[in-house]
Image 1: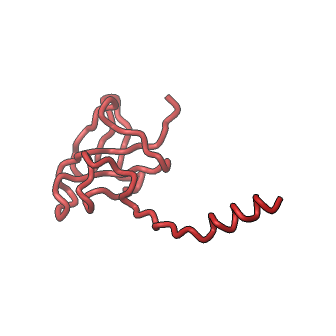
Image 2: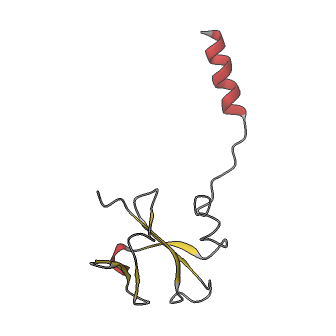
Length: 96
């Protein structure tokens, strides 16, 4: 019992680095500021893939990536241009 308490106390004193929002984005998708959550209303399911409404792009199902938090996320080619082409699109698990 004492050993458990010592382990728990030790773990509580170890400093933990805060997790930044971009920590889970793959390096191939994110340059540090070009990925962000997007509203589900900005993405539409089509027969050919996922439509990014503001760019008109259709991202094939085979190219889209699973979102680890159940939200939509989009990584753009150009940080300063919200309507620039999509580098990566993360979508929630749709059950298929």
